Image 1 (cartoon, rainbow, N blue to C red):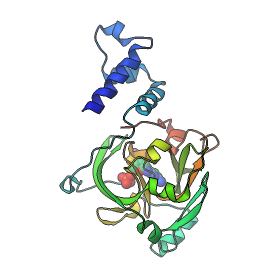
Image 2: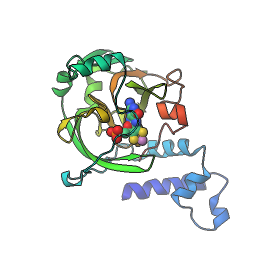
Image 3: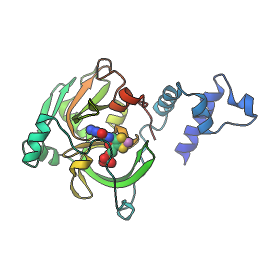
Length: 254
Ligand SMILES: Nc1nc2c(c(=O)[nH]1)N[C@H]1C(S)=C(S)[C@@H](COP(=O)(O)O)O[C@H]1N2
Ligand SMILES: [Mo]
């Protein structure tokens, strides 16, 4: 509650500090929605600035086992198609490995058993897709911060890029986050859903859960993770598949 209030006040503060004022037009304090609408185009920057300054490390709400949605639908690609993924799938991902490269001091690969032997975090969270549906799911996986500790980020790394095994609508699916989200305690690479290995439709064998973000940031079929200093030259340069293809916002924290 305090977090929400603070964020709202910050937004109102930011809106009041800049022209054109909704306040002038309506005579009373604008709602969050009105502010967002008034800032169409700059909304993303505003949202990122506000989130950056407050509450970025706050936890997303977690739920009880009985809250888990009986049916958690799949969306987007429901299987991958990279050569590595297709071969690994035949052996139930025994030959699969996750590759970390880019701005790491100790780049390396991890097999699934290696990832399963690392610290584990379990969380029951709500997934919100911009297309207008939500579902509550239970996840288990490696805290991403623990993985970063193992490969040691270089000082000039600013973003983490998640490369996926699916080419969707003719484009390689990928996503990226900044280091605040990367080290957020609820950012995990999930290999289990509802206590069982992650189903293929939900991104087997490994998907990102980045719980302060909307659904499209939760990259499925992650097979390579790259640390970079800039998102220029990655995909079309907007930081993710939907950001490139449909102008979705790179940062739209919840
Ligand atoms: N690799 C990959 N990741 C993806 C997608 C995709 O098409 N390919 N779709 C995204 C979208 S829009 C959503 S809402 C969620 C859906 O996850 P689910 O299939 O587990 O419901 O995955 C996200 N991650
Ligand atoms: Mo989505």
